[in-house]
Image 1: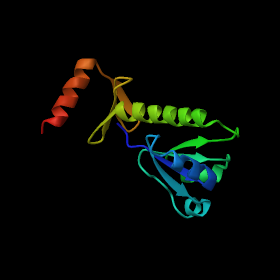
Image 2: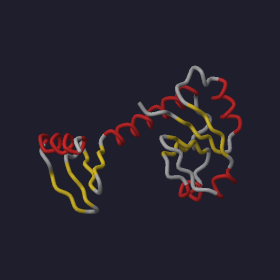
Image 3: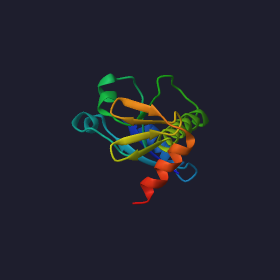
Image 4: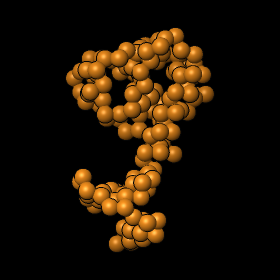
Length: 136
């Protein structure tokens, strides 16, 4: 299971609201200012950034999943639902890839990639490669 972290950008009210419900929810919270984003490139593993406006300059600096809240107000259950959907997408992506040296195997498409080149594999080939990679 992915350790869940929510990074709330420039919204103290939203941060305080979710922080009060933190024990009921299943994720950690971090509050981030716009100044921090403009100075640094953030890549907090397995995290979702919540932005309240659609500013492309912020989105370019973030390498994580982003939840844009353009349609406000939003109900709390709807917000939690959107967060959980993003985490499901993230876990699906991470569980579908296996990295072996310079190769990447996509379990969903049954392909092995090296740079931009790929070949299709059978299920047995994937299992065999996975097994052999675990055995040195």
